[in-house]
Structures are given as structure tokens and as C-alpha cells.
Image 1 (cartoon, rainbow, N blue to C red):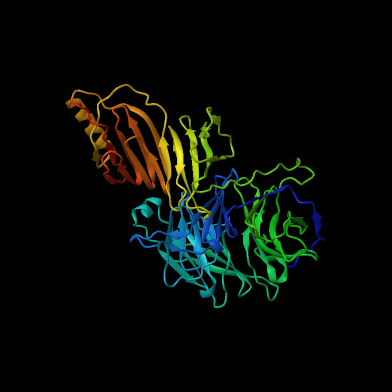
Image 2 (tube, rainbow, N blue to C red):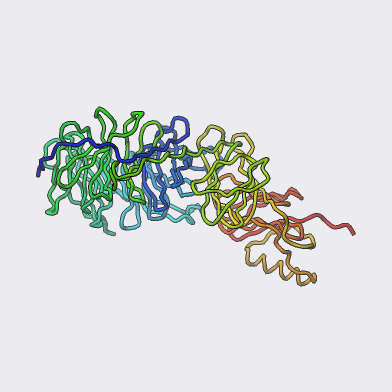
Length: 548
């Protein structure tokens, strides 16, 4: 069914802000939004997965899978990306199969020889990720392992594929409000619908009436039904209440429609290309079309996604990610506020700090007083002292000068100084600072225990046998993250490989390292001993021996 349209109106753009990824040559492409207000994106040209946080700070992670044998990591070229039911981000890879990255940046890969060239990917209602493979004319699903399985090296993605008619070339895929997986078939001019079932999905198809139609991108629309774009015929389509396709050809003056997303203003928005200026389009179910021109410099938008706050985000040439508030027109909105420049960590020189919760203070080198860390984060120089005794702080550091690849960890319950050497691959070190809040104590001996609970009991029993109390904790620092972070106490350093850990300088002049999740490598700064700790283990580095 064809619907006649009103002529388009060209509106002054709603207040649009754009943040630019500082990574040289950045080119954000596929995008997905997460509940914490972040937008994750792929950068195929640089082999990178990026994150634009709610505070306008960019993070970057290499889309590379570590080798268990010590060989160089396997680099992946990411395509589209989607949030999985397991809380991780899943992406298609040009090399075949799929990549999975946790919010902390841990990358794993799942592949099968029969699956190559997947494009669309989305989370299904059955706890699996669903995908399309246009070159092989099928849709498929892959089970999503837990983070614990991935960390233990026991995760195996189970991939199942389901054949479609020859030449269908399925592209985009989306979970509809009806619980089915909808996907476009540009090769045959149809939309596919797959209802998951343990015995295999039930697949049906809907034909787009206009001959030569090539449906491309789709999304759940403002009415809860599936809407889609057809670039070849410059049409926006939707599934009507009677189950039939409603086609809405775009009027003259509107470019070619691409990616689509529903907005809270009750309309469908779409990426427009091929026009006189870069723009986003807006169309209602009655066919009213409005164009919103984007700010200079020009460089066409690529993908469109609705954020957790309801605002739309779009990726754009020049390393830009834009944000549009669709609920108010420019006339109704206050003058646009200046967007702070995207924060960019530089290896060995600066790191990004952001308040996660509570209150955090920082004292920059050469300054005597602390200053509060405001919401939105800040860029601090190497050697800055951070007071996180009353809050939690997120640190983001670059892995190597000019790489644009970052690592992130959260710290709390202590004070520390941040330092990173100006060489490629140098760990970001946080050194415990502040006076020990304790009296005198006896030195301990270097020990390891298989479990934190058992170790604590053993230390208590030993202390009672020797007629003394357990050593009092003088200062401490918790950490949670993945990547090359190193926590340094008086007597030991803990090098992180992805975990939650605690370092304590105790009043008997020993340092205890405890691991609650993941793996930590410990170096005893007194004896030179190196120990690898896993979940629940601890190590106590001895203090100086007393002279008799």
C-alpha cells in the first residue's frame, strides 16, 4: 500500500552537539546504546571498539583476541555491534565469526568455518545473539557465555544457522515487540520474521509491494511495529496494523534514507545521504517529513541509535558522534551550551578521572591543596594524587603514546598517586599514599594462602599462638578493572590482568594483596619473589626484620 506524502519542511536543526574522538583517523561506524548512558561503537579502519561515556569521554579498546600461547593477539575488523543479554557487547568481524567485549575491554572471539561475512546482529528473546549472513543466505544464533566462563577459558559459543530462500541476502536484524526476530532481505525485496523455538525457528516473509525494492535497515517504530528504509526507491516502509506493508516514498528534496531509529517524539528518524547538505530526516505515520541539517563540517552520518535517555545518537565522518534532543524544537530550547572537548588520555602524561559515586578529590603536582573532582570528569597530569577515601573514581589511561587504545579501572577506599612511564605498553601504576592510621606492630613473613577466608583464619590462629593480635590495616585501596594497571604498596606491587583486588599496607609494616575475582601478579618488593594469585587467594609481603 502506498501513502501519499506532504512536501518536506526544512527545519532549523534541533540543538545538536557533536563530540569528536581524539584518536587520529577515527571513523565511528556501527553503534549501540547501553543502560548506563554510554554509546559503544566500532571503528573498522582502526580495528577498534570505542565507548563514548555519559561524561563525554572517549575510551578505545583494540578489537584483538589475546593468545593463550603468548603469540601476538589476533586482530579483528569489527562491523556492527549490539548489546547482549549477558551485559557484554557483541560485534560482527570481517575475519569471520563474532567478537565479544566486556565493559572492561576483555575481548574474545567465537567462530565457525561455515559462518563468514555476518552483518546484522541483535539480542534475541531466548538469551542468544541472532545474526544475518547475506553471502550465504541464512540467519543464525549464537549462545552467550557468562564472564566467568570467558575468564576461565571454558566458554564455547554454540552457533546454529537457518537457511533462507536463495538470493535473499539478509542484512539488518532487530527484535520486535512481538518477540520475533525481524530482518531485511534486500536480495528478494522482502522482510523476514523468525519466531525462536528450541526445535528451530518458524520463518515467514512479507513482500514489499513495489518491484525492485531493496529493504535495508529496520527498527521498531513509534507505534511498536517494524519500520524500515528502502534506499533504492527512496522509501520508508512500515508494517501496518493489518500486517500489510505501508510504503511512504520520500518527496523531492530529501536524500536517500539509511539507518532508522524511533524517537520519543512519536516519529521515526532516519539517516539521509546524497542531499545538498548532511541531514537527518523525520517522518510521522501520517507521512509528514522534516529535514534537520547537521552542523559543519560536512561528512555524512552513518548509523543512528536511540540512547538510554531517549536522545538520538549518530556516527559521522571526522570521528564524530552527534546527539539530538528530539522532544523540543530549536525555538523551544535554550541556546546550546558549549560542549566540553572530549577528554583524551596521553600515555605517560595524562589520565582521565571520573567520579563514579561519592566524592573524590585530586591534588595536582606542585599544588598544596586538594580540589574536588567535578561531575563530567577531568584530565589530570602524571603524578597527581587522588583521594578516593569517600568515593569511587574511574581511571582511563592510554596503552601506548598515540595509539588511542585505552584501559579503564575503578578505585576506591584509599589515596594514591597515578604514574605511567612514557613508553609503549607501560603499566599505569597507582601508589598508596597517606599516613598509616595505626600504632606499632610486629613484622610478618611472606605467605600465600589458597583462599581468602582460610588465609584470614590462618593468620588469626598464628597471631593467637604468638600472643599478638592480627596486624591492623594502616591504609588500603580497592581496585576493579582489566588491563595493565599496577597497585603499589610499601612492600609489594599487584599487576592486574582483569579482576577485583585489594592492597593493604598494614601496621606491622607488611603489605597484603587479596584477589576477589580474576588474576593478579604480585611482586614482593623486599624479597623479589613473584606470585600469581587467582580468585580468593592472598599474599603477605614481609616487613623489615627486627634486630635482636
